[in-house]
Image (cartoon, rainbow, N blue to C red; front, top):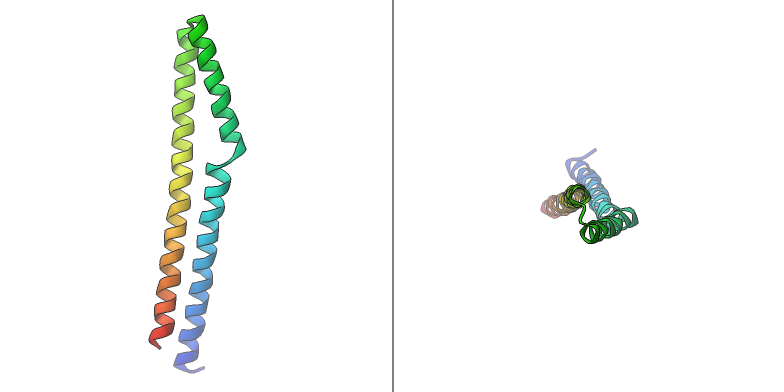
Length: 103
């Protein structure tokens, strides 16, 4: 194989890896951040907090606030991972495209 063929093949492989990384990040964002389970848990937690406020039960409110904080961290982490994978994917695709155009 010649040098140009190897570089072309290498840039196509990296471009494919970049697209896979981008799509994986997109799937993580859609499934984790916009998931129905997290939304349902957050809604149920709000109901528990409202019930705790009306019945003046401090322990229920304290536990529910810890649960809401945990859900917030879960969504933030999933969103961060998704965005990171998408940015890495775009950088890899851009780099492989620049490599392809250079040779």
